[in-house]
Image 1 (cartoon, rainbow, N blue to C red):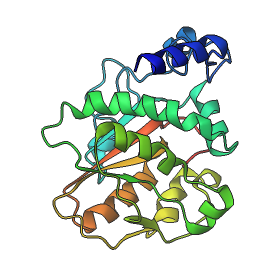
Image 2: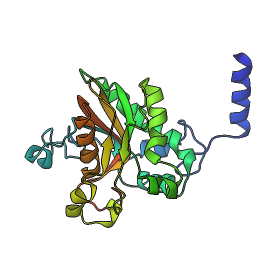
Image 3: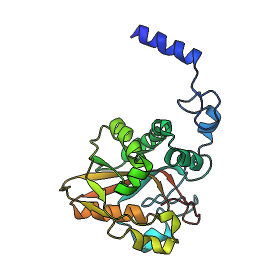
Image 4: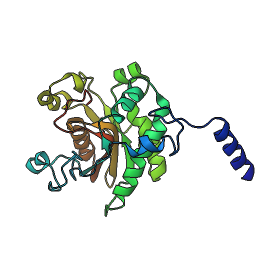
Amino acid sequence: MMQRRFWHALLNACFPARCVSCGQQARNGAWCHACFAALPRIEKGCARCATPLPPSASAWCGACLHRAPPFDATIAACRYTFPLDQLLQDFKYGRRLSLAAPLAQLMTDVCRQSLAAFQEPPTHVVAMPLSAKRQIERGFNQAQELALPVASALKLPLLTDTLRRIKDAPKQATLPWRERHKNVRGAFACHRNLSGHRILLIDDVMTTGTTAAEAAKTLRKAGAENVFIGVLARASTAQETGVP
């Protein structure tokens, strides 16, 4: 143990870790102090969909009060804005897979804090799936890359091949918001009996929440008692972000 600590300290001294955001020497895991402090945290979000809200707002946003989504709660680490938006673009489209660990750590920290308040927390983790075609094109599923370390840190089993995307529809980002519900309708299938399971569904970003809602419906039809959404970033409903 002492030898391991010695070599770890020596490697850090010779090859100091660099901040994933600015490239300066990291002081807080994968971040420098300034970038970690500047991460766009959500001070107050809707208890159901995590839409960023002003401090004086009620617990739920207007949309959820009007029509509650089919998931029970959404846990979001940050707002989808600089610098997290760029990091996620680099991770997902630039194939910068080294970002998976630090981004997943952000999710884990927020999930652990939020789930502690739930009387019946999740029992299993599921990653938001890609269609087979999209998975081949991209070479990996960003949600799966995040879900693996999150499930491990939370000591929850990760259910693979449980939720499948069976509809290869146009990207949500290419469609007006009003058409996104129709685009994902019937997009998922689940052939596993989830009775007695409480699912934490992991994805990278939530914007309108239409994809998460359709996935949650499918999981509930398969018997899931509760579905919680865990995302790294939540966009304001007023902003166009180019993500599903």
